[in-house]
Length: 571
Image (cartoon, rainbow, N blue to C red; front, side):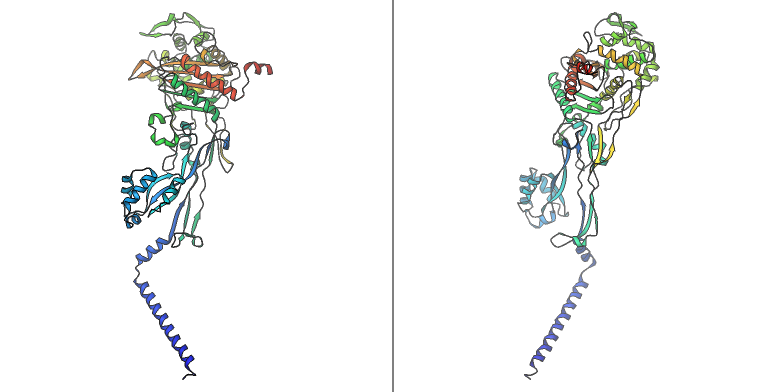
């Protein structure tokens, strides 16, 4: 027996091992049969990994490209929780208190969200800076975790706020360039479908589908942040100096229509847009209409000269400052007798301009106003533009032309007035204004904007005559002396318009404006300025013209546009 003992032990061991394996197999089979389809499905789902991949929104730059970033995406975290896990820990109150302290949010608000035990995901605070978010996790709060996210960030806060616009919490552009070019800026998120292990880590070998994100395209503006700074600083000053309700200004390139700066006050911090009311969010440079007052006389006189109804030398009786027509009286700010058409512009005579309008007739005045773009949007590449108001001829009364001719009973935007004066400066050619220079992705241009001629309301000959007339406005005896710039001849027009309040012209509320260009004999830039309800002075010459002077003077020097004497000497 001892000789066969090793063989015997081997057989017994083999039989026992076989029985154990059979038992284990039967047990596994039993367990497998005991698992329901639903249980298997839950296991499968718990291992499944489906994820939308983050995408970077494109940057926005000024005209200098990537040297000056105006809007960008920053990587941040969303602080989230699994209410079911928090509930199991029996520490919901403690978690709520700790998160409240660390995230500076209401403990009650956190507690309410954590009590949703039927849910596996709640966002407690979105767009938390990485350092602050990591501080939350170091507390090792049960069921609390971080989620990668992107936050829109505006490094210069309120700077250029109305042009840039902002991105809402859903990631969509909601105003300005952010809204206008949202389809380019937002990009396309990626998608991942895979399997994960027990540690919730992706098993790369089990990846079933992967679509990489396509980052948003970058936008380069025509606006120059240095000129924009000049505009915004000057608007801030006039708001304080004249206790104004609002103010706006635009700087444009005469020959192309490029917008080089656009400012509106009051302003708001783009990073805190939720705290700004609608009144502050409004871009007044394009989004409000106002009666232009005497700046509109450019349209009336241009039309009359273009149709050869008058010449600059034609004399008009200005009735010593008060004229009764059709039972309604029209007054001038200063009384004048006989003035030629050139002086009607220089002195800004209401009566003289109204009489010129009567010489033309209603139809001619209406057609030219339309040709200059009044009553229609300019087509600028920004949302929220208004088209102005020009009532159809059928609604004109017997005195309408005498009032519309001087900028009453008609409404414009500041941008429309800028394009009107620019067309006079540009030999009669009216250009479409545009703020965007290019859209590019990875240095490849997707869009490159080019100058576009919208029309030519007046001839080059008429434009040349009007340029001479508008120069006289800033000379001695003109209403716009305050718009002068040392070393440069300036051409333009003042405007002082009573505001309509409750259907009546106010005797205390005005919009003061000035629109012009320089150098007068070789126009490069045009500027429009509007100040809403300035106090105590309210005329365009006293309030808006000096603002024009400061903006235009600093801008021509920044752009190295030669003073008149140096330019003439070089010829």
